[in-house]
Image 1 (cartoon, rainbow, N blue to C red):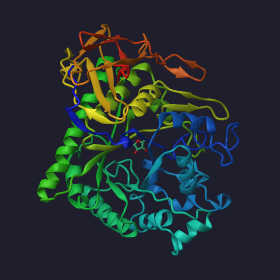
Image 2 (image 1 turned 60 degrees about the vertical axis):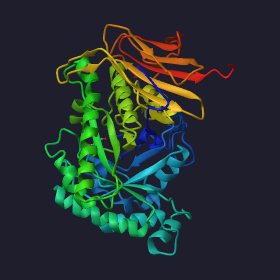
Image 3 (image 1 turned 45 degrees about the vertical axis):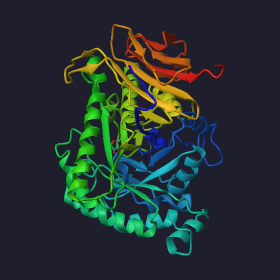
Image 4 (image 1 turned 90 degrees about the horizontal axis):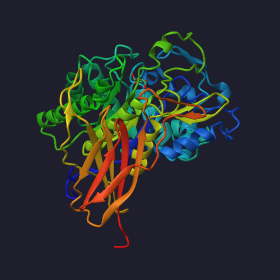
Length: 498
Ligand code: AHR
């Protein structure tokens, strides 16, 4: 592997380490909010959960959905709590009590040191509800909606900058599913009205629900033809599964993610060329993760309960490895991927789990996310790699070594995130860090477990990192020893004594 200061991909937009909280399952009720919990603050937010969220340093959180937003009336979630309606929440077959809504979530996000990426309902509603919401949250005052916010106790506007124009509108499961032309027209007109209310906002046009959709990438081409001049980003969503228990193939899924990103970039740039536009549309990968463990369980849920356990995947060690590869993929494409959201943050396909009334803990996937978010800030460098490769059921030429490199100039630090996909062999990585003279290995963190299916439960963390990785300097090169099936972070810093 060769790394060099001059091989710059891009400054990393920290928002690629974003996440997502949907009104779904126990993400909100029993997750971030549980007024009777021993750690609850005066607003009912669980402090133990906030502590874990703060550890992850998540800079932006998408809200309130997801599928749920496509039938959501935001007005139900503001004003006196005792007057808020209980509604049938059709996307997930539950009852929504509306005890948490826009204002409470903004308060919570402040406590989590995160900005909010707000989605509007383009399923059952449209221009009017969206522009009213922008006025309610962002207009300083002196109008009906902004004064209503003040009346609700929020004198200052929330100034929400980033907005999603609906969610997965191509999906048959979506309430108010649209054809690409229907969506493109509605999204463009909604964007226009929202921008008239607040010209400073940024907008995300809905891309396909996944690369496997039959309408991908035609959906992007047709919708962007309408939304190109109004939107700043297009969304990508992708989840991976390991139903066949085929570890080699499962870990190769980040190659599919990479391909997905390339195709979306090409489609955006095709529309740019077609329109003779000078503007570049960037990517918001605002739903990504592993999701499959809980699917059978979820089919058995009784309808119309309040905050039942839904999408509660218990993540394994090998899931954490794929999550590490997916994070590397985002970093390697940080020239075009400017926002991303690991879906989701608490209880629902999440790095953080809770027990109602009980403790909170870190799932296996918490760790690669934590280290990458905390140490992956700065400039993405393009490593030149030569790695042995393998073929799997669905992929050919899968490199055993998956890596990304981040240079933090302020800290004089180069951080290498590296996964060894090999199930039997240690991988020795010889790193020619030619332009980083006087740098040495400061830390080598390793996440490794002999059992790919090892998982973490409350009070029993089988999968946790250590920082006793075997790396050393030899002949001016860094030698990294990556154990079989492992996630690694090598921090290389300037020796200040030299
Ligand atoms: O994150 C779970 C669900 O996955 C979201 O609600 C939806 O947008 C996607 O299909």
